[in-house]
Image (cartoon, rainbow, N blue to C red; front, side):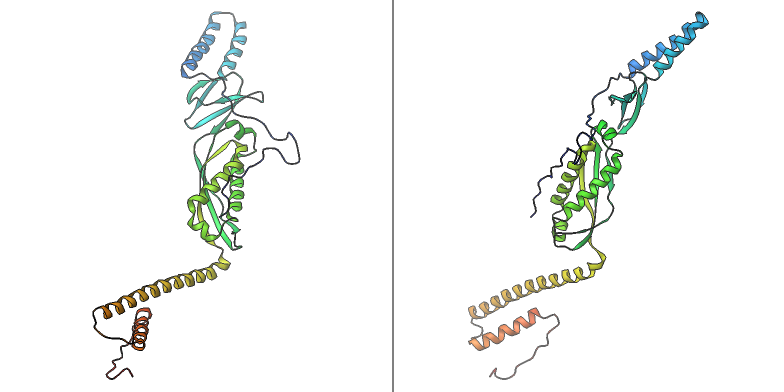
Length: 294
């Protein structure tokens, strides 16, 4: 059985130094709904005050109000917002509902809900060199919103590609029989390998399972015949084993109850007849022997 150790994916770029975006999620400054309501009251006050003063105060008060308005954010459950201040990452806001963040920040919504997808049906050779059609379902979730936003170009496309690559690699280590019988072990190995590759994108893999597994069409008929032949051989072995046991039991009971005294030749003839009856595919035709065996 091939090793099930989790592959180690080097985080050091190959051929270049320092090209990888080294960034991790950090909590950004954010206040909840209470602070947002207080800020709203302040904005209303700033809009009302100039009405009782000179017109020149409208300009600075208006600028302040516009700046303060940029602080409001509304986040749905299962989502986060990655905040940037003039291009600089300043933190992630995970506060659901109404909240406020530092002014003049731009925000990018990042879903942290559990998602899943099914890989394309891949054509891969197994450990015995037989071409297989195989696919898998991968369940994943964004764990580090900063890496998912900045470390890779498109996180979903990245996960799809890495999942297919990991599925190909795992499949080549096992035969068709192992892939179809050891589903839990294979699924665990696929999940571990995808997780190792997805760390760069800040994604955690919850589960990965084989969804499609079949021989490629060009060998499917031949492999089916092979499986049928193996099944027939196994069935014959079982039938013969049972028939021998029944014959042995019948002979023992005949001798024990002293029903008939069988010499070696008659014993061999009876064994032959019983085996023919028990192992035959068709109904046997009895032949009545009215005379002597000899």
